[in-house]
Image (cartoon, rainbow, N blue to C red; front, side):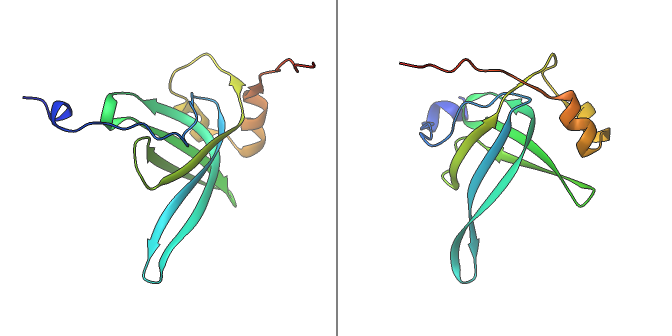
Amino acid sequence: MDVSSLVEVGSNPNVAAVSPGDTVKVVIKIKDAGGERLQTFQGVVIRVRKGGSGASFTARRSIYGIGVERTFPIHSPLLEKVEVIQQARIRRAKLYYLRGLSSKQLRAKLKPVLRESTKT
């Protein structure tokens, strides 16, 4: 018997489809002693794990020269909103090599995808 057959996975409509190389802005609910608050995390997606109820993605950012990575479960009810800010053209599935780069080198590596504007 498989656990995934017992638990139904409901997709979160506020979560955009993310892929490695995307710069995302994640709004997540944090439970404190005083109640709940919203916290934002903006970074580059370096890993996406698929697999039904265990799906997650890892985002990385650099704050004052220190790298911070955070893993977010996609189907979590605490995930308030995931917004893709910028997409990049990459050639790897896992971007672990970005850990050794500075912020300036990171921006040079991630080449933005040019989107065609739709004028009507």
